[in-house]
Image 1: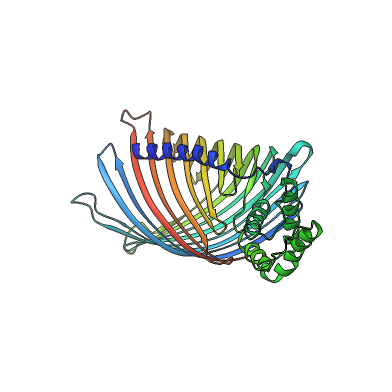
Image 2: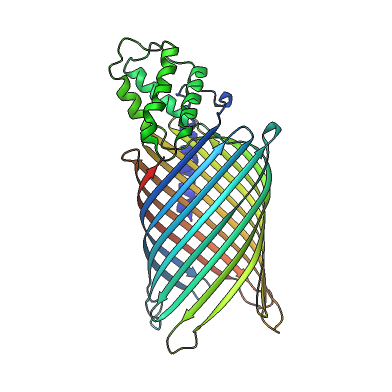
Length: 459
């Protein structure tokens, strides 16, 4: 835990350092940037591999357990969003298939090594709709639907689980996230043209923002065919430079520079703004589980369905302090209530949770992003279990999770993306049944994991 605290201190130091570095860049007034009506579409196909090591200690019996896991999979995601003065809408669809293998070594001489194989598939769709009124006040709604299939096998025991989840959020809020990707794209292109002495003079802040608006509008007719539309889009940028008499005599390299940077300088979405929101998520969950083990009584099946209610507050913050640095932060206190009934059994869960995230993004080149992310989650819960005619058993719980993640993303070309990440997580949980005069059940754990991926992306 002390190591994680040291890393958090280093993260805060980096925050202050990059703030000072950001002052070296020309001040573009992003508050004055009026984002035009935009529509964007992306489709990616990803292959990925992950690995993890987990170690946990149970304080009551002083047992330490370890687990190793590896997975490989495929994921495809489609994302479409529109952003206008009075409306923001987003549609996401995802298909994922993964294979997992896990190994848990024996913890005592009487124990045995456990090997687990898991196949997992999911289909997911979500929609977000925000309707804007005066002073950036908005009403938000939408919904999501997810289907999951999970097949797990340990020795001769097989467990199959099917889950269906539907969620409807409703909320209100103030503020807006500006998409300032084209502002940074314009800065990249102008910096390169200036280096080659192609422009007569530097553009003012207002002229740069006007160019960004033209660039943003030019991309609205794309639908996963950015390569075919590049000539038409670049011609609109040409017209801006010609109309403002910006070209010097040395224009030999102009066309090459513009086309190259047009394809590679908007690969990472950049945002700016603060959004405050509050609302409630209502979800319905259905779960069907089937257990099979030849010759034993563990064979059987069970069905469960339940509703969950999750009132929440949410603060979102994005600040691109310069072309190379980005600050991202979120904070969300939220409540949850779930009641599950299965035959004569009843399980009620109530909880309060705080989620916090801070991310420092570094963009050394238009093709490269390195980010360091710190997240903290804390949850206080109360649980009531009633089994048939037995009296209700109450318990309380507390859990906390601190995580640090280092992510790297590099575009080999504007369509091929390589990603990698390394994550370190410390977890703590404590539960107690007041009716029993026993010490709380405490588990401490640490997990180290990695991920590498390769994706083909269409715009």
